[in-house]
Image 1 (cartoon, helix red, strand yellow):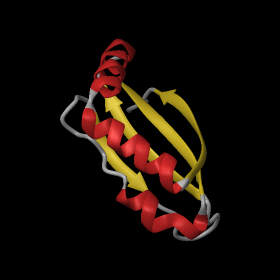
Image 2: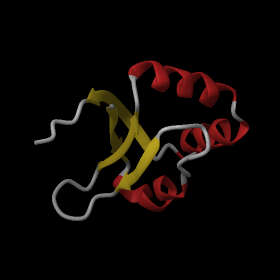
Image 3: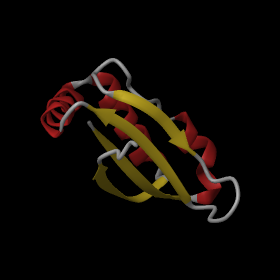
Length: 96
């Protein structure tokens, strides 16, 4: 299993716009949601979602590129400019 960790640098004056961007759950993976600023940095948000493998994630990305709901979410983020930048990392869990 892998978890995709997305760290967003967001406009702290556009939190409502960022919160409006939907997570698309129907294309695969387990979405753990968006995590919004509460204490500390006011311009950092996270999204976490897990997949059985990196190959499964790549399939998800292909589906996302062709999905109208995903394209609308990307367009909304671009129009509102609520996301200034992001970085994507992949983590693997370590369980006892």
